[in-house]
Image (cartoon, rainbow, N blue to C red; front, side, top):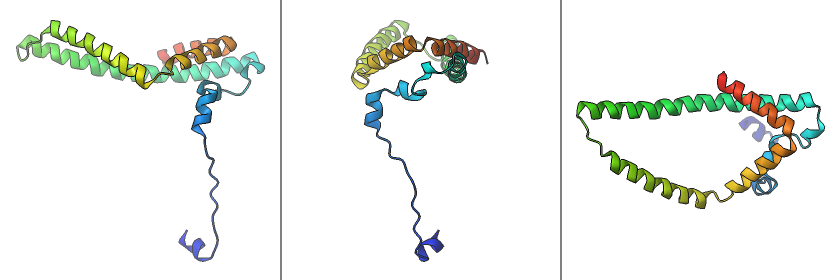
Length: 147
């Protein structure tokens, strides 16, 4: 590289500039699939929905198993320590605190992510307009969960 710069040659790297604000206005869900997927054949629509559903289902199952193992293992260790007398848990206080934190997290989530309702509406509209793709996605998702 230093040799090219010494010879006076310049390298023009072609980078594409992405406008994230424009992508957000247009909606991320529509950008995931080809412009007019409903104009494609039914087989193509089912294939696109099935493959994307399988990928989502497979990832969901792996991440879900990991999270369930971590939470379940922690709870199991806590129960063993409680039974052995190492710790004493005030379950009434735990329940009261969980309710308080659940409400607090809900309020913070609404402040931090106000456009969740808009994203859900976009997803609903997309599924209504592309019923075949949505059906393929659901089938692929279930197969991915079973994988």
